[in-house]
Image (cartoon, rainbow, N blue to C red; front, side, top):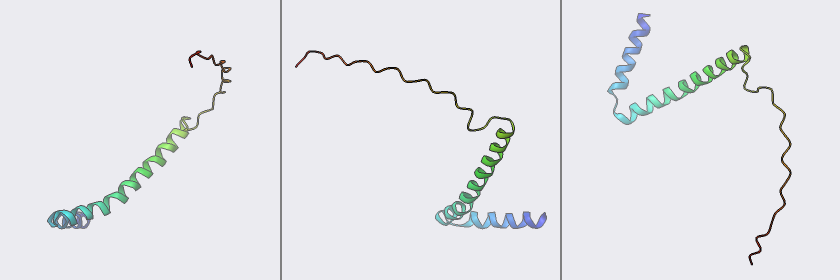
Length: 79
């Protein structure tokens, strides 16, 4: 664990020492894929939990009532 912590501290110092634009690009390249992976994992886990609890995304569909009959149009008489 000490090795990982030491490596991480060195990496943080290296990123903090970079100028802003390269620092931004390093963080962006690293964090965007990690953020997508975390979001995908949470989505899958929550979907499985909700499915196990019976709260699916697709509940039983209720029958759709028939549309009301169309009303006849009435002219205003204006020309």
